[in-house]
Image (cartoon, rainbow, N blue to C red; front, top):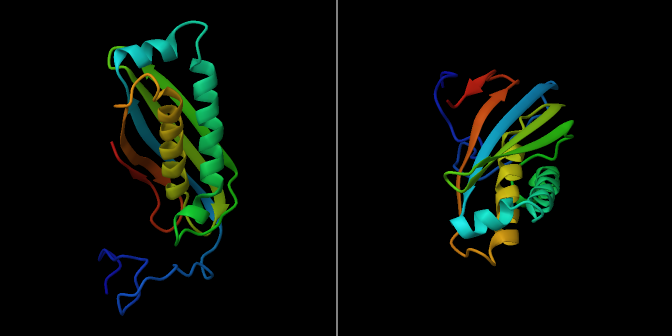
Length: 162
């Protein structure tokens, strides 16, 4: 099979699920950046962003939850490898007009496999934490657009989702 032919790496030749064997790979520096967004109604967003209210507490709690989620990714996604994370960074930006919180998670490691799942897990759990802490003001909060934006390192090199 030519190397450019796409495959599902977690299925063997017989179509059975498997964990990818990375023993022959060498450690290399790897980075992944993922994003997600949380949209809520004007009332909930106003409460979240009102001076003296919980913006700092909500976002700091979401940041800590994101770091914990990235560190435990292999416990939740069955075929993920446990890997040593050198960095889990989480940033938030607020879009007042859209009543939206954008989440950006960056994960780094020097290991045999990438950190894409850890970055997306960090974004997902940060978004769900924001939902949990704001749901009393808006049950219709929407978590959306969890996606990989960038990855670098390993055999496939650099990839961007612009």
